Structure formats: C-alpha cells, structure tokens
Image 1 (cartoon, helix red, strand yellow):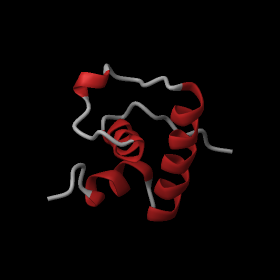
Image 2: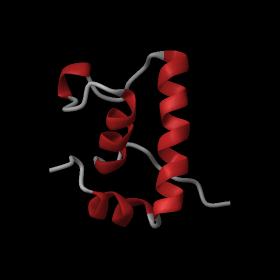
Image 3: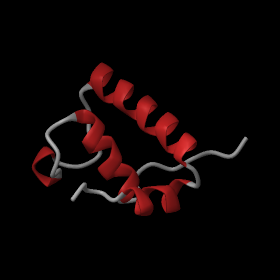
Length: 66
C-alpha cells in the first residue's frame, strides 16, 4: 500500500492537478535548500517526493489562494 494514500492527499489539497504542482514545488525547495519540515527520522519515505507527500498529508504545507 502506498503511503500516504492518494485519497487523503486529494482531500487535503483539492485536486490531483494542484497536488502535483504543490509537491513538485516542494521537492525543488527541498533539493535546493536540504531543509525539511520534520526531523529526518520522522519520515517513512527516503526520497524527497515521498517526504513532500508526507508533509502535505500532515498539513505542514499551506496553500495560498490568489
């Protein structure tokens, strides 16, 4: 089973399209700064894309409405 589940993520963000964009931007930030919102031992995933998805799942990424 994939963690976190896509259903939970889409509910948190609103749409799959927006989820892809948010996660993509967060992965680029992680790769550029090497800064995480959680302690590295708290992540289940070893890859940055999985870590970005976990941050969305836990509500650590907030979206601004334009």
